[in-house]
Length: 573
Image 1 (cartoon, rainbow, N blue to C red):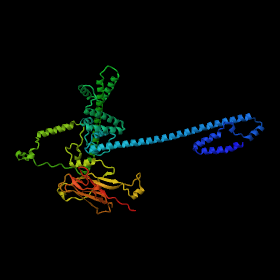
Image 2 (image 1 turned 30 degrees about the horizontal axis):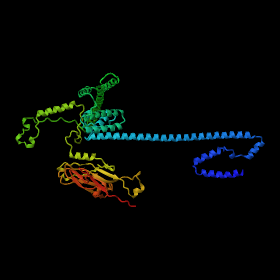
Image 3 (image 1 turned 45 degrees about the vertical axis):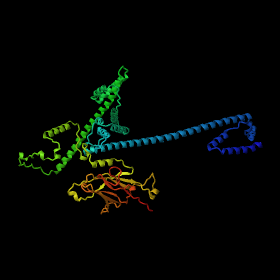
Image 4 (image 1 turned 60 degrees about the vertical axis):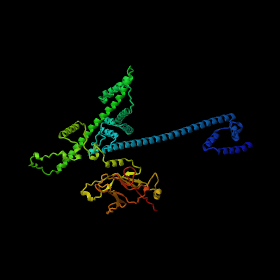
């Protein structure tokens, strides 16, 4: 007995030492198993001698005690099993709750991301439509711009009803019929149009607009196959031409019905010429898209005419009110002219021998030819479905040649800007008339300027800001592009100078005026810039020159790019 008792602590110490090398979860399971488990070997079983003696005195036999212990052991084992089952259920329920929580969080993130993506696509679509309207208004429209404006005018709800002028409503531009426009495009332009249509198909969500873009894509694909010589038809060219002639006079509804009949015939299994009917089906799909685009264009013309009439009525009412205010009294009838026409009032004919060489080279137009040309022009206007109003000279699409000033401005405005650049086109009115104003008609030069902004990472900003929370942007430089293509004396280069305003109290103390002077026929122009010291080093991008009618301080292309950079300010504690 003593040997067993002495060996007990030694085994317990060894068990505790072995348990110290296990992790907490394993130790917990081992201790629980040892608590409820009983050694199977009888020599190692613990016997409570005093309890057994007391039970023997109460008359409890050894067999009854053994049976009771066996029942108690079985009940303990069942309880342990139930504990294991409940623990497994709790762990499984906890895992399911965590998985459900994680799944809900992912679904919420996906929904939020989908909303963001939808808003981003909607913003990109609106910007693309706005760019199309601006390019069409400025007579530098691309083929995709004509299609975009057609989609806008196809739905009268999308056109603004609050516009006040025909230019704002887009009525001054002549919209070509989509299929006629595609017939005039070169393969390179068709490929660009194909890419642009795919972009709108990806961004558009309106079913009607999507249908329009799908039909346009079908027609563009057919034009591309035709230009590449990749004919999708295996029938003879003469038969193909007959098919096109037959389908060109049908409406979209008739072509849709014909398309359904051809598909039913191909599925019927009858002995037919499959190649012919498949070619007819492909051409039917293309001509159905063409007819749909033409129908859409007719709807666009009707909506534009209605909008034009509404604007004209509004303008007429405005003029009527203005005239009614100006009229103070009924106008008196004009006095009849006392002069009577006679043949002496007609100008005398010119002698061809007295004309100069340049005048003799001019085309001769008789009165009959002039009247015939006028009749043809009037007939052309009467036969037109929609006649756009005349726009200002800078917006006319039928100008034979683009002016040099417009070309320079367009090249500079279409150039991509950097991340840290913004448009800077706010000039300051000087109110000074040049001395040569009585000889030449003064006009303001055109310009396209940019301002360069960025972050100043000085000691203060490095201490109080970081990349996630950057400091406010400051002006780091300017890019001035002033166009002088029509100078009277091109040998004298334009000049610029900086001066401060006399009434400094009414203006900002940290700004000055940068004034450009070129001479007739251009007025002086000034811009308000930040009052800081300039960097005149060429390594910082500064250079001053004047070439080809453009003021240039930094030559990057064939035209001028004026760049002014400031010195960096030092932070003082």
